[in-house]
Length: 198
Image (tube, rainbow, N blue to C red):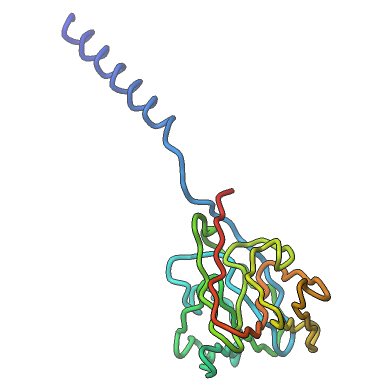
């Protein structure tokens, strides 16, 4: 009988230690989702969350037959089409952007982790499609974009471009939406660096 009592006491103590250890376990990940409407025709879209693979098949699982993506990098477009599956299955990282073309409007849901810590988005001189690496809507100045005199940003909204120029400050001072990519034209290559620790 005494042995049973000791075993029960030991099991209770072990369970208490285990539960105390677990109560101090914290997650370092911020997991979420973002709904982004895709209009009929073209939409400049950004991947606002890191889902691990960031492939088109994981980012757009409900794509319509014939949907297409156009990715711009170093002066060249790479395209992908959805004909039952994405071919090729391009990777779209947070901080970049794509043109998404669809004939049937729908809302895409991005699911993944919010990127945190020291983040760097390398931007080439000339034209780039970029976005904020974190799901946050604010002015480019508040998002820490390193603008130089003469830089420009172009947002594709409602089938037309809206532009903003940096001449000491952004005019007009537009804010990209969460999940919205935009063109930037830069005079020199820069690093868009942020420390994001919510």
